[in-house]
Length: 172
Image (cartoon, rainbow, N blue to C red; front, side, top):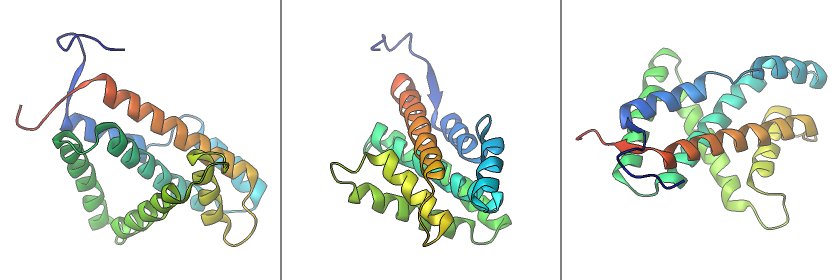
C-alpha cells in the first residue's frame, strides 16, 4: 500500500531495534505450549527446542531487515542497535554472541544452498532447525514444519513492518 509520506507511520531506528529484539527474545503466543508438546513427542528437552527457536527467530529478523532495507543507513543503524543487545547479553551469559553468530552463519548457509524443487527457504530452514535439535537422526516432520512456519511468519511480519513505515534515522 503506497501511502503519502505525511500519513505513513514513523519510527526511529532505536524504536525498531527494540521491537525486533523483543520479537526474538519473547516467544509468540502458544509457542511455549507447542514446544512442550513437541519436546514430549520427540523425547527432547524443551530447553533445546526453545533455544534453537530463539536463534531461528534471530535469523528471521536479521534476514528480513537485510532483505527489506537493502544497503541503507536505516538498515545499518537498526542492526547496529539490534546487535548491541546481543553484546549486552553476552556479558551476562558468556558465549551468547558467539552462539548467535554461529547460528546466523549456519542458517545463512541454508539460504545459499536452496535450489528449485526443495520446497522453498522456510522449509529448508525448518529442516536445518530440526537437524540441529535432533542431531544426526532423521529430522522430525513436526519440528520441521513448526520451524518453517515460525520463520515464515516472523519474516513476513518484520518485512511488512519495515516496508510500511518511514524509518527515522538517528540524525533526524
